[in-house]
Image 1 (spheres, rainbow, N blue to C red):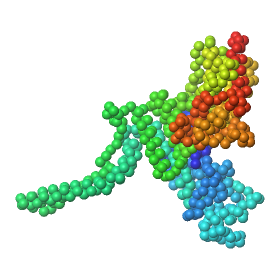
Image 2 (image 1 turned 45 degrees about the vertical axis):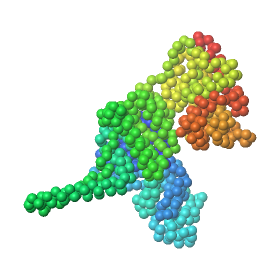
Image 3 (image 1 turned 90 degrees about the vertical axis):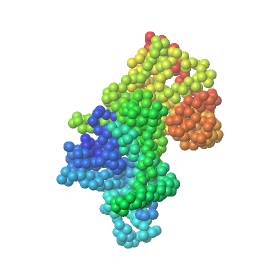
Image 4 (image 1 turned 30 degrees about the vertical axis):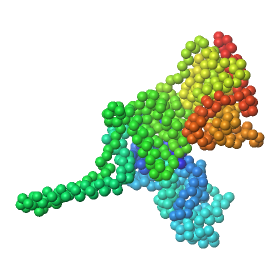
Length: 632
């Protein structure tokens, strides 16, 4: 499970708001004290991690009713089975426990009376059969058995609630029965069992705050280390007990001998004395810190270094809990990861988080004030909080408006730096640097292309605009101000599961081709630049059967829209020392475009029906290069 959305009612500054999350990476942006941390802390309260405690002061000052609501929609497998009735498993969809959009929606309610906050109440929003006044999940087994008798029905097992409910659903929920939104109490009767089962499936949530104490003596650091120490020391308990018993015996004997000598001297007090030996637990005899070769302890190091170490303490502890709970889903919520970090370390850290976010079982949520971080992610990964005319915080959802406001909020500038512009006659724009490496490789290795134009000519400026990142939006508009002909070559992206991403750059391409000048835009006929890699190259490199070649009907159509980086990452033997490690979709994407493209031949491209398309790219570059700049 991953978070689809969070909604808050009457929680702090938020009267009523819904935040939509990406499955992988989320960057929350907004001015100071606008409510970025509130979102992370609301999630912590929902998941019950106890870093943040909810209290009456969290009640919105302009509240409209006497309750605080924190709700979450989860992406969930409809086929997920949970055990509600002891050992009998059932599917969420079969119990009608998903909402109308097929998400799992759970919300917690904190009622307020006499300025006191009640204990949380937990509910589930379901798209439920209208024929039941009371959800079947809230009925006790006797009530369910009575319903069977009333309808003269027989269940496969009348002693199991899930089986009875299944029989009732099959009989009652026919084509004529409507489904309506219904709230199910998860603390009532069998609802409790649902919540206990769902809790085991929920992702693990770990909040890392920017103002967290980061001395190595602080409990925030020592707690996970002490836990680790206890776990390791436990392996030596038997040996230690033998040594301890032997020491206690010898120490006790010293006490006895001493008392006897005192009695010899006639000291009456000696009769009231008894030897007593105490010891500490083995794990308390050890402490753990980190020192460099120069012997400087962690709490003597700079705040930036300490924070980086602390962040990785946090990650290590989180990973350990994942293993212990056998839960593959984890959410890292990190407040301002750039705090006290050198710009180079900021980039390294965000790259690491991006890489982590693309692992199937991870979701990342961060807040930031740093332009460089915002520029590194796709626009759909950005969440902007602004204020409406009444100064209430709102989420800006319109993409272009969002990007404009982010640029204003963070003061972002373009990073396109064109040196010796007087020599440049044409600019060729791509989404990412791997696209540039691909075009360079095919130009170098396929003579037909090089005969048209040498792409390494100093009059040709190759630039990547950042794909769907914020940087693309900035650089794209910046290039318009230059008096240089442009060619834009963007992926069509029609292979992605998220249909909103299909042809997402078409508006830019259409705009370019409608200009009253010589600028030109190409949308790739295949989904991505990786789809121009021949399947035989992939098969030979990764030792996997591509399943789309050698006479298979419509193989080319499938190949042209396949998500190859995902396909390879999931099927390649990553232990194979011959290939570059491909620990994620991003790494396999990089390896395809940068390395395998070096082996492409004219024959490969002809078979992929891509030779003429790429040839047209080079011909257009040549055409624009030869234009008279003064007439442009």
